[in-house]
Each structure stands twice: as structure tokens, then as C-alpha cells.
Length: 385
Image (cartoon, rainbow, N blue to C red; front, side, top):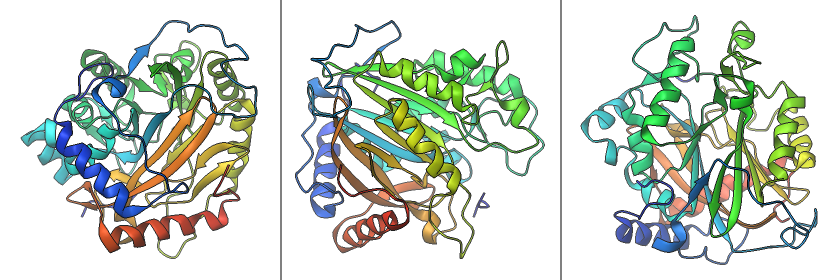
């Protein structure tokens, strides 16, 4: 861990004219994807996202062409950011104005149909810090900041989700409920922690699941959710995680798994996925996942296609303190899905300044995209489906 140096789903969009213009210019300048065609323009009608907690309609062969991943239904653009906390300078931004805490990157997030990040902090003002080097917590206004920036859902399955004990976990869940903001990968028991959250976007049913493959060894047992035991969805319980993916597959058009995984980067180390990541990804794809993304390394790793699904091994820091250099390289992964088909992928590069990602443009953006694409070389993933 480096040392420190709104829209609600289904509600009308706010302040989007300038944001959409910014995002469009960025995407045009970057060319940051494996598909050169422009992403579809979002509108007030298409940005609406309806969360659903009830059982969706049964899947039929006409809705999804088996495992062939042929495009079905309307296109939906998903946005993914990496690690988020509200420490250091970001806490001052949050205290000053939650509605603008994430800065200009909000324009990119709002443009997508559904946006997701990894919330790497407990949301509590109580509890006892865990016996570990770094513990993070933030006030409930963090959810206001995420919503205002266009984030629709966050995973809290990570090595900071329970930094302030069960008290902090319960406070996090209560604050999320009060804010009407979905969090995944965390719960009062394993059933809740592994449960997919479902959205309906443009008629497409999107299921998102969160789990962590990173837990401090001395805390793993205490932090892992179990039957009648609060905690996090542990990716080491592969049987339960695969079962959660299969259950989501039966009720969704697109299944997303957001993982906390990999190894924290040290200067001079490889920026490649570790064996544990490369072993898990194909198992989740085989279970029915269409998108498998994640973070933890605090630097960008590579992404691409695996058996038609899209896998990204490291989204890096997002709203996070940074000492500069590679830990400040950030951005938003945009994926366009049509059912099981991932029809477009694009990287919108940014650099962290004052704890928040600032989108790049021009030559700097082009260079950043080229660097990001080069990270695929050691992943075993493909540039095309």
C-alpha cells in the first residue's frame, strides 16, 4: 500500500451537457480501445438504470444464443474504475462539497449506462481499527460523492472493507441503505455477501457480483463471510463464488464479476497478473461470467478477451492518494455489451492529481492508451473476441 504523500439509477441525469461534451472529446482524442468506432451517445432516457432485487424473467434461447456470445438486445455501456478511498486530500474535497469530489472524471462515468468502482474503505465513524498497517474509513457522505459522480454500484469486497470490524461493516451497510446506493461483496452473512445485484438497463438484465482474492493472512478467517457470519465474499471459496456466477447467469443477460485480486506492485516488479489471477479468471468465465474485472495492485495491469468474455487484471488507483509515477496512472474502462457479447472496449486515460483522476487529452492521452494496450502482452488475453 503506497503511503499518503448523481445520479441514482433510474433518476433523471444532472449536469450532463458539459460532461457529455467532455467525454466525447476525450474518447475522440484517445482512440483508446480495440474498436475504433465511437461509443453510442447516452441520452436522458438511455442512461436510466433500474435496480431490481426481485427474480427476473426466465432466460430463453431467443434472448441469449447459448455460449456463442452473439449480440442480443440493445447495447449497454459499462464503466469501471479501480480503487477508491477518501483519505488525505480527498477527505478535504469530500468535506468541502461531496457533489464535486470526483472532479472532471464524473463526466466520463455519467456518460456510461452503468458505472462501478471498488470502494476500498469502511463507511463508518465508529469501530476499532484492525491490527494492520493501513486502515481506511470515510463518512457516509462518500456515497453522496459517488452517486453525484455517476457511480451506480461499488464492491466492498477488498482488504479494507472491514477495517473497522463488524461494527464498521454494519455501519457501511446501513449507510448504503440510507443513501439508496448498492454495495456488493459484503453482507451480514455469506448469502448476502455473494448475492448479485441486478440492474435493468435498456431492457438488458445486468448482474454484478463482488469478491476478494486479497485478505491479510491473519484476518482472512475473521473477515470472510459465512453462514450467519458477517464479512466479505472471499474468492478463495471458489465453489461458492462459481455457484453465485451460475445463479446470476440463469437470471441475467450480462454477468459482471468485480474482484480484488493480484499483488501490490513494488518498484521494479512486473506489471503482469499473478498465477492466482490467471487460474481464477477462466473458471469464472466457464461458470458464466461475461466480464471479470478488478484491482488491488495500485498500478494498471492488462486486459483483453478470454473465450469471448472480457477480463481486466488491474484497473489501478482511481480516487486514491498517489506518489506519482505509475501509481498515478488511472482511467476508466468502457465496455459495450449486448447480452453476452462484449462488442466494444475502450480505455479513457487519466492521471491522479490531488487524489482524483483527471482525464488526459491530445498526445498525452494517445501515449497513455498505447502504454495501457502494451500491458496485455503478458496476460494471455486477446485484443479481439
